[in-house]
Amino acid sequence: MELDPTQMTPVINRIKRAQGQLAGVLRLLEEGRDCEDVVTQLAAVSKALDRAGFAIVASGLQQCLVEGDGVDSVDVKKMEKLFLSLA
Image (cartoon, rainbow, N blue to C red; front, top):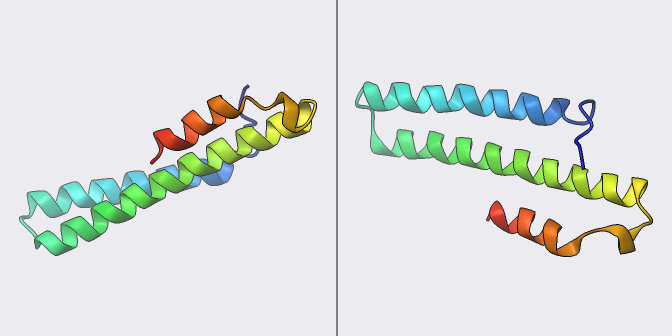
């Protein structure tokens, strides 16, 4: 299953935002900033990446349902594995 690039624009934007946040985390570490600030920003990066991953998996599932023969055509084990890989 290939991803539809038009549906990935919000995901790409989210990942780019996370990339900027991660650069901010590095900057905070290099500046010796407060641990709480670093962890807060790191948690934001992690959450953004998780949401991007879930959006990708959900898009893939939707494509399977639309392009396939419905629920019967979805590889449930494969989708489950993708979701769990994000946990």
